[in-house]
Length: 399
Picture 1 (cartoon, rainbow, N blue to C red):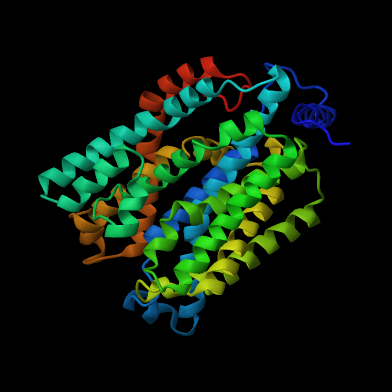
Picture 2: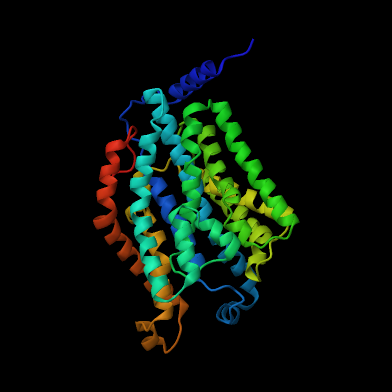
């Protein structure tokens, strides 16, 4: 005797309800530790864009024998973007499952309104700035990239044509995130828990098939990092983490959390050595199996870090890190333009150090990025976020 899809969905909803018996339609799901994860993810990306590669003479001369280890970690910091993706998938999946359990369905149109109000205002404002700069400097590639990004295909332009010189190029990741949002609300609305697990696993399989053929055909490394199908592995990891937890927040000892943190560091280190090191010497990719195992370790490491922090109380977290996590979208959007200005224009460090100083650039750049992102959040993003809250079924992060 087989169960009908409606029966499976009913059983799934019952299991979820048992794990969260106190859930009501207007209950809030807000975990401040997830804001800390956001800030960590941004900080890793910032470090990746700030520090020069180890083959740069400034690094080689100062660190000598440690150069290769430092290079591995600099490259691993790029996985901060994967951490953003994993966290986003976990949180979106959790909120939508709670909405389905609370109201019996998911209002997909409201989901898209919420995402548009959160992502699009700053995204398109930044694209407009990028376009103005590109036109002013006659940067044809950046103009075309901005056009692709306007229809949320900016990452695919990079796959086939390379990274544009615009300092707003990190916006390519928004294209991938929005592409994922085309799939996830519909799958959570109509699929049972088993089918959702199968859906997430199919994304993993698709990512690894893509990595296999990229490695087998010796395609440029750009086709790895900027490829939607490859990056979907991080989204799939976040979804699976959410589905395995079944709405529960893990309670662990400090020792268990430290063990998970150590596992995260180990995964990312070996992942970088396997999958990313060739990027430091050119456009080559590492080959099929290093890519497959490398990205698998990276996604697993993201889950370990999320688990290590998930469940911490607000009193255990730095208030500054929580705030910086709230404004992390602006931090991500503005950090490279700020670093670009410091590196290519006359600035105070040139008078103090009589030349280029990457360490000073990083410290000043981080401070200026925080100032710009804070202003953006307070005066530009917050009004849209308050409007977004009107379309919530499950309340999340406060504005």
